[in-house]
Length: 234
Image (cartoon, rainbow, N blue to C red; front, side):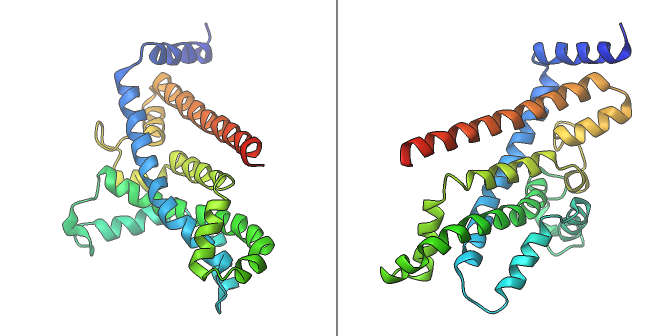
């Protein structure tokens, strides 16, 4: 049996045996990424909708800035969060460095621009269709924002999935602020990088398979939700 086939066979054995180490890493990954996406939803969606509906000086510049931040290097975010949370930093007294909370903060900074940019585009398209009608009905600026967010909620699932995908695939920032500590801050991506460097390829492949399956399942769920919404609400 070739080394390639043997590695995959060992990886599948780990998965079929519900290996405790794999389960623990996967669970922490879902907790950290889920927390970041939840915060990103609370910040990014309203921010994107406000930019789409708002009429203020510098709107175009702000839109360009949000779009540019989608490509923000994760290691830069990691270093900034590290400096903020380090013992000598402004938030060092909170003791968050090398904890899952620090990883959530770093991932949130990465997903907010992405979710805001997608939301701005989706809501802006809807705003162009309904702006006149909402103004005639006397909707305030904030009422228009909340109404359009609700009206576009099914399309905005794409923003949530994009944010979750970026959060779950993130390595650099969580490695810097989390430290990749076993049974504490080790998530799938950092564990894959570590186990590959150690030569434990079956565990790295097993975690990679789980990561890909989760991403595929999320996309299948989003597609099914979108089709259901189109049939249900037109």
